[in-house]
Amino acid sequence: MAVQTKPILVVDDDAQMRAALSEAIQRLGHKAVLCDSGATAVEKLSDASYSLVVTDMKMPKMDGLTFLKEVRRRIGSLPVLVITGFGTVENAVETMKEGATDYLMKPFSFDALGKTIESILNRQATGKNILTENAEMRKIVQLAGNLGANDITVLITGESGTGKELIARHIHQTSKRKNKPFVAVNCAAIPDNLLESELFGHEKGAFTGAVDRKKGKLELADGGTILLDEIGEMPMMLQAKLLRVLQEREIDRVGGKEPVPVDVRVITTTNRDLEKECADGRFREDLFYRLNVFPIKVPPLRERPDDIIVLTKCFVEHFSGVAGKNLKGCTQEAMDLLTKMPWRGNVRELENVIQRAVFLCSGDAVDVDDFMIGRADVESSANGKLKDIERDMILKTLKEVNGNKSKAAKLLGVSVRTVRNKLNEYGQKVPVG
Image (cartoon, rainbow, N blue to C red; front, side, top):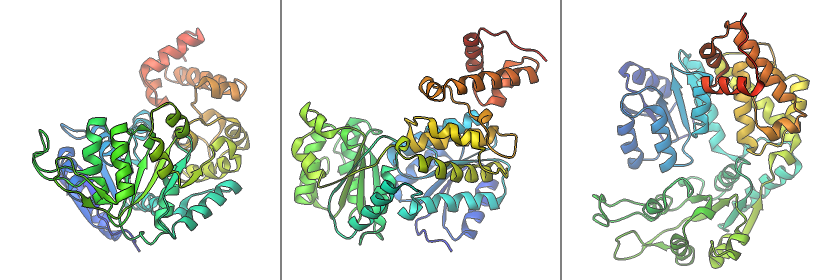
């Protein structure tokens, strides 16, 4: 039974596909809001909150990737499932880099669609979906759950991709505010000149283009929780306004004549050292102390090798289902290689690497030959092995297609330019079968 009450926003220019997606979503127990273009969907984003966006990739005027970027600019945490009939591994990876939560390639079964949607919604729902075998992470999850009992302000620090937002969601879901909104704002993704209006809202006529009154994210989160992601990117002027929110529990809309009371719990995250930012004059010290009432530091993935194993198994299983494969996990050699990597992109990087490997895998388990990782520090950490694997794979693929660089690039999920550059790097002529 579906537990989400917010509707799912469906964006597709094909009327038959919209109808089919709507029917499938309703069978899952969710309400669907339908849009025939990206531009219409952008307008809908301001009208209501959604549990998920399902969007086609190839659409006129505003394609799916452009729409995805706009969603990420406006609502950093809203999950987005991208559907495409023109996908390659390269296109899929590009959507994931731009913030897609997942994607499906046509043709797909409604069973696959349903499983993907439910998987996304379940991952968003509660902290029990924070998959970890690491003792320190388990303590953090338990601590986050305990913090839900009161409205203490929490500052979550850690490198990008470690799961800071999941911890924040867990705090909200275990709190008395769990049935109220959870609103996430990525302070690094919104231009400085727009961030004030996004957070605090504005009155009609407050500035050019303000044709109507608009509630800001702080008002939309009233009664619930607001997550200010990457708070270290917030301009000093807005830091002063946020400090007033924490002190007075009220906001000033842009162009407003009187303050508006708000009841909202504030959770912030950052990958910066805010104490150093304060010392360097880039962050207000009084705001830092207001935010740092209860600090939580999330360790990087490279310090959690047990989590590399459990997360890899989870990602292989998930992406195998998406790709219509039945892979038996990873070979031991592949797993050994993964645990040696530094993972500077943390869980997000691991997920992307496994996703690509699953789609490249032609055997019954992911092996080292399926990894396309060319970053120098990763190669050195694996004693140069990855570079040899990459070279052998590119040359083997070129030989199979009689030296056709375009075909090889398509099969490998990279650009033709990448193939050319790699051949130049290897000092290698195109092998012909």
